[in-house]
Image (cartoon, rainbow, N blue to C red; front, top):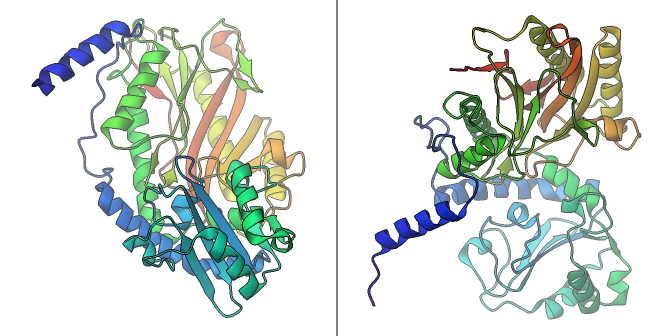
Length: 453
């Protein structure tokens, strides 16, 4: 039986549209017309990332010694990938049931071995990977007997997902294969994983800036009349448009994009101390103050972006004057964070300095900035009230070259809304220099405007 694929695809699309109760009123998302923020093809992306991998591997031996690790094991389970695999091995699919990447400090050099179900050319460029691999339950005890590592680091017993990713079955396999003596030398790899994932190399900079630029352009379009028709477009329409815009531009995301909405005379809903996410059925109306939290994933790197927009009332040409004051408070907070940070400073000291400066200026502020890069909520020195005030991140040292999502907000009474408190929540990706944090793109200098018909 022959099938007309084009007719079949059209019929499928119509059927899905009919079945879906949420038909978007936003315009169809399209790729950016400019090639400025266009990622290369997938094979070229892999080649670029493998170039980065060689440079990350070159740093690993010193990292292992600083963190007192003699052997590091990363175990990848088929269809249950370890989050570290694409950063310690070539970023390609791994379907060899259980693949193990072994890093050993031999005392003179770093030995790297990939114990995989089958050999592969690209692995051979980075690891010992013979055409006839020795099974892991045979090779691992041989390596232990040869090197007698005192500290064998595994992704266990840590607070963050990327640092505690080893499965129970994987641990049991390693313990049985290597024996009780080796198991007694198993230690958490958390500190090594943090340093490895938090370390950015100069080669990644331009690609990351491209991704930030793409995030910015998509966000601006989402918060414009291209997507939003006040009185008609729903919050869910905008969220779905963002999904389609990412698909059209060949990126994915690491979290669901969220929209928040503030409206005159309406109680502010909260969740975990922040503005609550707006229900998708809410129709965006003139006079609404909008916020979006959005980021993309591409080439193993992640962005995080928050911006504000205002829907003009009929006859309005700009935001109310009080909103400009509120927005300026957040800009002041952003600049203070950038200028207070320095390589070598303790995160807790920087956080305290920022909050003291806001208190002196009478600004109600909240800071919850986090490292970013390999993971969206990355590892490293955060400037976050939840950890800094509890002392958990107080002693973490800011490192030059690391990336941070400067995420924060201020709260200000708005005279035009009968002194109802409004929140200005912004987020920008930045990198740490000797002179403080520098953002990849200029900070938002005004609230985006959406016009009413």
